[in-house]
Amino acid sequence: MAELSVAQRAVLAQMLERVPDRVLTILSGAVAQMPGERAAALSIMLADESIDRRRRAIAFAPLLPMFQRRPDGVESLTFPAGVLPRLWKAASSLEPELLLALDDYRPIEENPKMCAVADRICVAAAAAVRDKPEVVWPSNGGDEGARIKGLDELALCFDLAAMARRGLLNLPDLILRPTGDQLAELRLLIRDCAEITVDGGPRMLEIMFAHLGDASLILRLVVHSSHAAAKEGFLSESEMAGFVNRLIAEVEARITRIASYKPGAKADPGPGVRTDIAWCAETLGELDATLKLDPEGEWGKQAREARDRINGALSKSLRSLDKALDRLMPSKSVKTTGRMTRQAPDLEAEAPPLEAVQAAIVLLTLLGAIRTAAQVFGCESLRYQLVQSVTERVTVYVDQVVEAVNAGDAPDQRKSLALVETLAKCLSLIEATDAARTARRRAAAAGARPSSAATQERSPRAA
Image 1: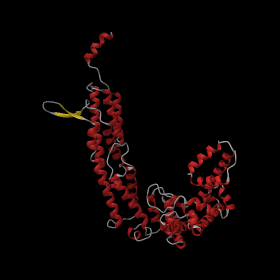
Image 2: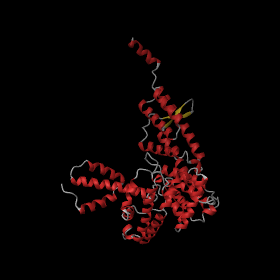
Image 3: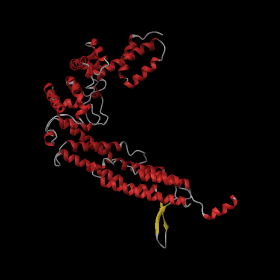
Image 4: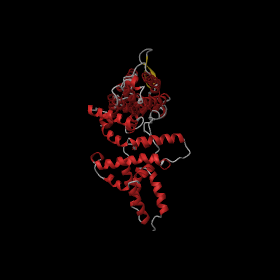
């Protein structure tokens, strides 16, 4: 089989640039098993691409997360993913002999030479953005103004890459329990960045923001960046206010999704509604813990309104829980003494339809999901009352079903015990673990007991 031609290599090289890392690894393993000269040539190209990407990941590490959108959807400074391979090629091709220094197995913080080479490539990248904008970020007929602004931001970020590389080493400590020296280093870093580029301080925090999985943790860095930053009056007038505004905007967007949620026949309550509830609770809790919000200030009012909206949306959904349980636990009136009646399980009724079971499960899942968030939203009292009332109601119903089964009054024992298992799962959803365990234990021991007359009739035959 003939070797790959120059044209084929060029096309394959362009294709490999767009292949995700995970797919590249799979391809490398698959092609290595294929026979032939072309397969061998392709395998070498795949290996070279993998090495090149490892070097790029080391050199561009401070800015690498900025070439993709945040998973949580919070607005952040990002650049098109297609710019990354073009920028790397433009920056690394200037001094290719230096790239071998990036292949050292030691961590970069323990290797001054590797760190120096990586910083030098970042400087070359900033120059490439300014000198070869059409190569790095070509025009494609889109918003030209946004492209020009993006190029400026990209160059300025790479101007700070070397400082960010050192500053990011303290990031885990800065969001937990920083020492006095670490706080001083952060403030010095922010001040030095402000002297290097326009808005250098906020831009450095933007770089750090890209490395945070939890968006609300940026508030801690903002507060640590200045002695007065924890006060809303000071912060709202500073260039750091954008981070708080973005978090509040995302909270409001998620509240809109929560408010539009309507229980339906789904096992999971809504499209990620539990994730939205947890995210809003964590973010609002971080705002309270980190910033000294003025109750009458803009942010204080927005946070209070956000809580009220979530509280209202959750309360509206959960108030329909009783009706959902009515369909899941059919009842009928039975006479006790005289004209007195009481409600008892209707074991002759048809099994609850699937959509009724799923609707109840959705609401119970939602009730269980707000356990840790209810206090932040101000609906802990409602949640507690609902959990208690649901636990008591379901437990009483289960007891009555098991008693009917034991007494031989259940028309279909298997169906009745299956209903008990469904109700035990419902108790588990609201974390009433003990009640659910008791229900299952009673159901496992349940069974119709034969009457004494039946026993006497069977005894002679047995004899």
